[in-house]
Length: 508
Image 1: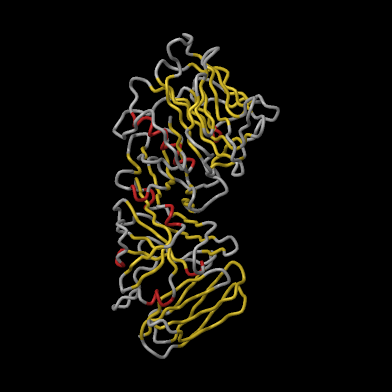
Image 2: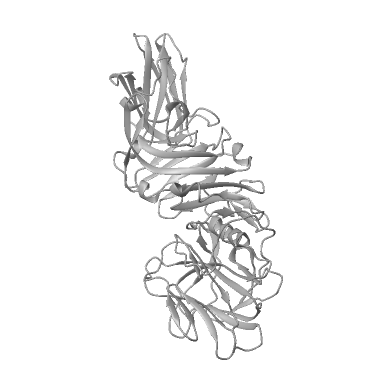
């Protein structure tokens, strides 16, 4: 028995990743995102034509989303019947991807298969059921997307000779299922089965629906390791990813990490995965893992120049393939309850991938938007693994102007501020230009925004003291001219109604 979510696993089959051959061909494959409902029929795309039929009074519509992917929303009395399914002599694995209503704490029925007139096998959100006994595997319902799998023999001694069974998904005579069902797969575990075959299926579903596999590596259809649990245990408490695997029909362009508030997407976050028009090449993946507690509790991060900052998040990005070297991503943090003002938070990326955050390897990225009403941070135009070492480590930290002043090297360059492949930060899709820089003390700052906003500009010396303040009334275009008498390095803090940015200026 395997329950895979944020995540419980009860193992009947021991899973040890190793190189295998092809993926397992399913007996039954129902996908809400690649099906057409013909009347009350959910069509089987396995090629075996085991089409399922909705027999409830109300046929659910395919308009709910699980990690940006389409799903059917099951309400009370919604029943999906599988009229006929010919199983195999060996083990069969029944996998269902679902997400319960957050308010529902009661045990929900998932599925039940009748193997002959007197024998059945089934699963609820908390128990395994059969005609002889029940086995409890959970005391409570798990919130968030879940990949739930039960693998075992479906025909035993004393049972009918037939391998044909029938069953149903959703509500039964005594209980109701309330939530989304996105995908149903039945896999035959034959003699040519290898553990990696099954793991590849789990990995496909986990990436697609934002589910964390516990104590398990992620494999592509070609059995390529795209997330190695053994070497990345520190970052494996919560995992999500984007990528493409044509063998499974996987084309995930955006994803949310359950339990952290983190979302990542290629180019931009659309209302659904289908509406994201970005392009990813086959066999390319970007996986993100983290320590969940690090997003809830701040810890000290020791940087060079005797600077200590409070950081949230301890995450790692693992890249497979070269596609993400050319394609930028966006990172969103939602429903934040972090200390300090969100205006001060910066994304720190350790390009060495070690988590040591030596300043020569750290890239500082300012948010492109700060939404204080919804407690959200947005970071645009992020390129990962620019040095091609395979991974980056990241966190978030509030940096005051005094902190930023310590990040200026004796030779006068700020360690790095959106350097490398990343573009200069933009505010609310606006544009900031400072010229000339370096200068002789006379400078011009231009800031353009798509909407009107007030502007506050503070100029700091390297010791953190404010040497000049300039304010502008609400407008979409601001032009600020200034003069500084002393030579040296300065930091310009530029604050609009919603955002903050810091630019270095040199007077010589």
